[in-house]
Image 1 (tube, each protein chain N blue to C red):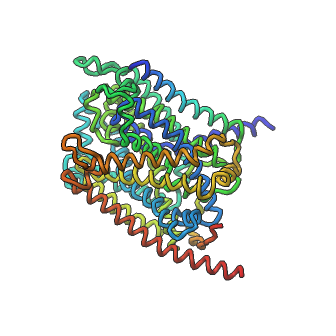
Image 2: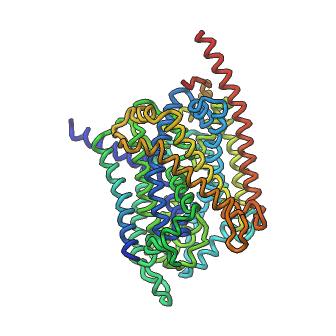
Image 3: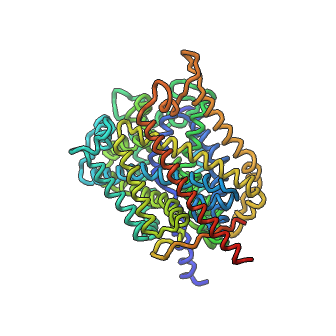
Length: 543
Length: 59
């Protein structure tokens, strides 16, 4: 083999790794994970997180890639169609509706956060993000930008910059999808993502070398920040075991694994349905997972949580919201760097790029369903999906006080429904298709063998783990006992929906989710009739 | 930062970094023919071609 050919082969493989890593990295790594790690604040959360990665994330990732390819070879490319083929029961297609609902509804708020990234890149570039050394100023800037103090604020005159950036980003996403140039953007991100990782390494070094920013609080230093994230015992003295008894922590850890790996999202199963038998799903899935985890744990968590601890302290970190922390703290970190405007602009723009690739992939399951199930062409499907997601995004933008609508959607769709779909996926792989047959399917075209101990994990441990978390979550959230009154009362996110402390915005958000579920179920019924008719015609041709 | 915190951090960050490095080596050494990131998969519906005919053959 000539040297030139070897070099070309090497370059193309590095390009493949970059493409896989680029598609794996998103806002979940640099914004959502640090928010959760800060909220639960200890090594106990990280223990639940890693257990979820090994027992749930990696096996379900392989199962989803395999099931998608399996159903795709039988002619189905939308989640309802794929489950119709996999479960072989008329109800199967309705289960598959979750695989459309999840990405479409997550897109509704994800695109808004994407707009914040672009907005912050612009503000950093124009010097408007240099607000001094007080974190309160950055928090106030962010709250004003997203309208966190009052519902409808960002739709009003003088406060609508976020809406402008949303319109720009929303339009860009649909323009790319409409013109069919998503793969061109992906090619650009092959180089953008390594740049993001490189920049993250620079920021990581800066964070780890920062001194205590407030001389009055020398205890707020980097080591204490790392301890806040990694010490098994929490700062308030709660031991690890007591924290691990909280089912919400396990659900959040599993939910983050699913969210960030796009497992149980409806995205992997849709894209994998376009693969051929000789395509490698084992190494593809594992490389994407490992790149994602490296960015999430090695970079995202190590940068934002210690930095947040430095500037806010343990008491200040809690209650900052899942996605907000990075927007309040990181600009302050950048202000301690030379060329702060350049670092800030580059960071938020590259984050924006990472988010674009993810949000584009969230649109594909909805488009595939509208095209395959209803026979719409690409442009009709794009228009209908644009209308639906546009309404949803405006809903999130309007109910901006404390980001209640966004937070409620993120829990019920971005955690709860993903959890349900992941459970369905692993049961379908382990028990429906059968673990032996699934194993053979997974290894078609694969250069790696999945270790055999994953067979019992997939068949028994994974479903048992998921169902146990689910049962405990219901026990401690739906039927929780109030320690003061001794009564059975809802807790956590359920408390927002029923009882004396119910939030009208949370109730409205869940009603909106149910409306969307109903809408897609009606469309699925129509798609099912189309598939049944096609099957009858095919049978007649055969006979 | 307690010693338990140090151990948790080193094991966690070491594991994710090691796994990523191992995957890179596997891709470079084993040379899999068809490795894909999600968004570089061709969905076949990017242009103006009509929607594919629906099929129903779950077998």
